[in-house]
Image (cartoon, rainbow, N blue to C red):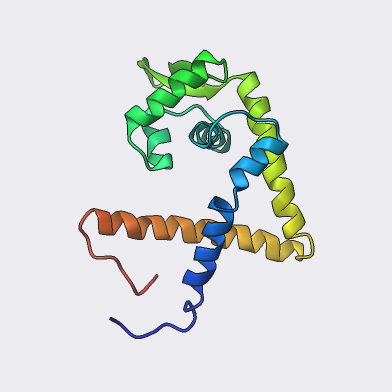
Length: 165
């Protein structure tokens, strides 16, 4: 075990607490109820991924972003498509392939849900100066990207760089 890095010592307990708040705190269930959404969490995750991407995605891209296998996503998409929430559209780069896009109904549904969640986040950060809020979102995004890369390196059998960058 390497030397203790006091600048990040408190990170794990805070991340554990945040994870518990987001998962066991029933964030999804409470937000879905407030937004009058009747989809399960994996289905809503797909809608949020499509909304965030701001473009149609391949099934494989959705699966990668969800960190699940393609067949799981395909089953969810089939149900969402039957309900008119997503649709398959031609891939402009490969006419044989199809992309997944939100329908207007799906966009309205995800908008209601994200409005509730974003309202909670905005209320929690209301007393923060604008610069701090902007910097927090930027740094959190960077951390997620870097931590994902570390996990991917470990999963691929490579040694994770524990020294940072």
